[in-house]
Length: 483
Image (cartoon, rainbow, N blue to C red; front, side):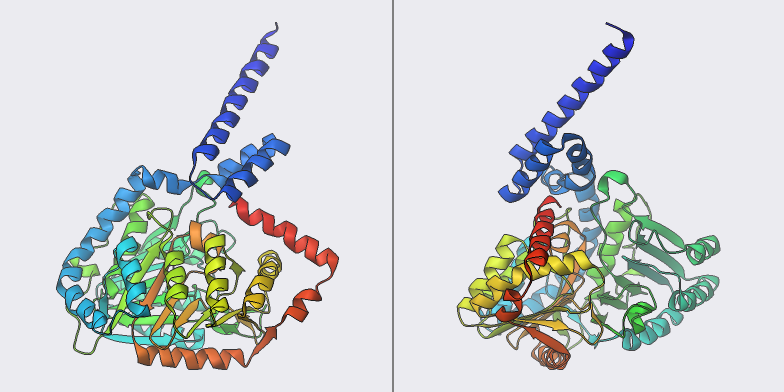
């Protein structure tokens, strides 16, 4: 046998061992059988393609979470900084929440507490922004007034009119001695110029791309969090870019939802930023006193909130479980907004069951899409919802990027988590659960205003989809099981 033949045999044997190892991992994993069978099917019909695709897209990092990976330990070490805040503010606000009786909001609160250690904390002030034109002037003003620390964590950091303004403000604050930390998602932001970030880094800012590793490319940091001096925090759907203010060149407008918080509720958002910072191989401690709220006890009249984080580094897909709990706990209505809709089986079953029970279940998504494939796939889920009695709306006045849930008239959830499998299972996501009737009534009113800009989808619309489009949509839906 020639040396070349021997080498070929060795490579083939190693490839076979690797392929069998993947099959063993899939069979012994605890993921949904449909996911496992989908991967086994791909490996069976196209072994080489399936092997590469699995390494890049299919690895179950949650399996490592169960084993107590270093990433889990790093995240937990950052979240330990919350203990003083939780001990000081938690009991009073938890008692306040439970005084509202064991209702739907309390059930949601318990799931968030048990699965994510999301204590009920106080927001001394809470503002909701329904457009970038409302949010960004407030953020720029807060950045300009920073005295000690600024931490900014976004999925997308563009290079445009808005980022130019932010850069100049940050350069001025750095010159005044303010510590500036910036995190952005490497893969999602790869197409945007980095000259402004390099200027900031050269001036003294700490700048770090998230998850810059090939084998983890399927996992994204989808959170959007800004904290200033430990006293102010922003979170919600808007990234750092001009299109989030005006729709850019693609859309007539951009409809989104974002929050500004002050008080003890800032602490978990800062701790999450610190945890992601450590996960991405930076050693600075972003939970030191200068980054955290100066007074951990909320002021009288503070709004009870919970900051809920989920990712492959958490033991459960907490945001999804909170949504499912809300669907099961609702007594009147559950109104949902998400630009995308690719639910997993448990979430879809919870939605159809809630609608079948007679609840007012409404789902609103983008009617003008930014990505064709997920928009097509979403249509394949309409029929079971409509047949169960739910209502489906497509927003057409611009691009709808808002991620919100409104439970009865008692609770509102505003966050970064879409109602699709990527957000629900794979990505780093954060939601703010707001236990306040006044805030909820405000958001219900906005939902109804948004509904005026929607086209309602009916079963007649679903039946009218042509056979070729139906085949395309159903075929693309199969790929969601490979994530």
